[in-house]
Image (cartoon, rainbow, N blue to C red; front, top):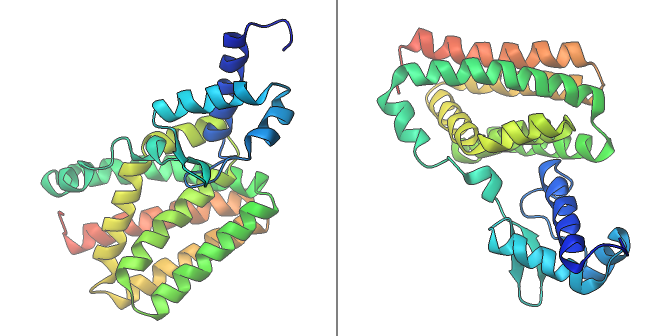
Length: 238
């Protein structure tokens, strides 16, 4: 980068950091490596890294915490979250549209997660499955719902496909809220549904961790189909 202007070097470093945010290298809540490490990694001076991170802080993608470092915000994930819960409640047909969308997107992410998940991905998925099992055993519907949503996010992250991740991230607020609403609604008054959902997640996670992509996709689509049929049978329009 020696022949570049200072501004050009900063732009290049920004693009590299943005790529790491998009592809899940540094997920929301992660702490960025120290300036010195990034400067060495990108072959630039520390002040170039500092300028790049400051610009991303100004855009809301990073957060600088005094004495603690620079962290990734959830800005990419939170973009359209807030209105969706009420919209689903007010417009019952929207739930069907979302489930149809999820069947396509999450079936594909499960397929590619099974193909590409590395050791860290598999550890993350297994850890979240254990948390889900604990929440279920403790009959904690709220924790079970939020952990369910986190597990679906971890599977998307394990797909290692930038476009899938970007699409999933762009609508993650809606998906997270939709998953949480569905799970809470299904498990609060239906122990059988709660047990079936947990078993479905075990099948999905086992297929991903065993690198069986077709089985993973089928298991995920079966899971979404079950959620859809449950609400059709119950006549729940919320």
